[in-house]
Amino acid sequence: MQASEKQLDLVICGGGIAGLAAGYVAKKRHPEWKIAILEKNHRLGGWIRTEKVDGFLFELGPRSLRSDPSVEALVAELGLPVVSPMQTKRYLYREGKLGQVRHTPSLFLKALWTNLWAEKGVGEESVYAFAKRRFGQEVADLVFDPLTVGVYAGNSRELSAQSSFPSFTHRDGHLLSLLLKRPKTSLYTFAEGMESLVKALENRLKNELIADCEVLERSPERLLTTQGSFRADRVWDARPPAGPKASVITVSVGYKNPVLPVEGFGHLTPSHEKNDLLGVVYDSSVFPQQNKRGETRLTVMLGGTIRPDLIHQTEAQLEAIALKGLREQLGITATPDAMLCHKAWHAIPQFYVGAPSPKRGVSVNEAIKWALNQGIETRGTAE
Ligand SMILES: Cc1cc2nc3c(=O)[nH]c(=O)nc-3n(C[C@H](O)[C@H](O)[C@H](O)COP(=O)(O)OP(=O)(O)OC[C@H]3O[C@@H](n4cnc5c(N)ncnc54)[C@H](O)[C@@H]3O)c2cc1C
Image 1: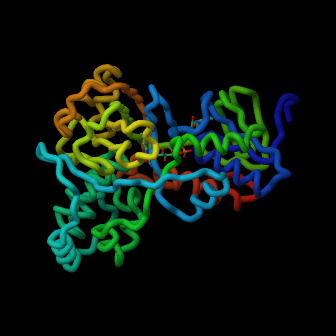
Image 2: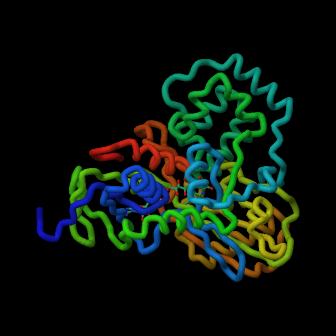
């Protein structure tokens, strides 16, 4: 061992929500362990980032979590008060019109009929091919394609159904009811935004966190970093997985007055329309508990693999595209009182047909569940 090498029980690479949650779980289960969480950036939390601009609360990354007992137990332990959505109506913007997504009885019956006669799938399928074979083109166009845009900022004709939505492809029997009925799982966030979760974990891990420390090389028990080398009995890797990722842009827009013509969660645009906007989240309508004075807060999503060209535009150009989209799609002509453009380069993993199966899915819940499982490991390396 070199003189300057630090010897630890556990090193966690990456201080996103997965790494922080893993550090918290490890410290709780093994208070005797010497632990270090190495994060290459100055700030922790990875993609989770909440900003206040002139009193408007803007989420630059994830804005909510889906209810899940194990994750909620961790949130409760941290003593974080949660807020529930007040509006859940979802819309589609297609062929120049905004329409509410309605799972009508006729759509349900058509899907049921197609499902009865559906041929067995052969091998891995794209999300679109899977949905079309099982439920018909309408469900593929109105349900699965926008879902793929919303979750992956990706193309339903290119991403693998099995890797991108394993809970759908595995749960054959219940799939139809799962799809066409109102989902039972609900969303939640925190009064002061998603970053509250990061701050709560950071506060409990003050002695374990090492920021501005990039892992350069890694062998099973030794790490070379920009702050020297570390040797550990266990290394848990909470860095983003290798593989292709979509870059997305969020333009957060705030108005002091109510300007939104509809109430709801937001709207998406189908991928084949190649619209400038992937969709818009109506933040002030979904979580009005985060409003300070009856304002409107919106997040315009741009880019992804649907419009990969947009990430190269300047922030001013992207803000102009977002405002034009809001005018065309929601009829909002008012001048915003606050705006913030954020480019998330290589942010969302894309599980293409033919690629190896991913180790975990793309969500804050999946990251936390990965962390909860690491606590069960006692020695060695976890990916
Ligand atoms: C715009 C956007 C909106 C999203 N919306 C939602 C949503 O509404 N709901 C939802 O559930 N999910 C959403 N997601 C996905 C969600 O944010 C991610 O799945 C989740 O945050 C991943 O957490 P993580 O800790 O696994 O990875 P990351 O957040 O990527 O954290 C990994 C950390 O590792 C660090 N790191 C990387 N390399 C090194 C190195 N060599 N050495 C040291 N550190 C390193 C990084 O700097 C980073 O801090 C969204 C993502 C984006 C980009």
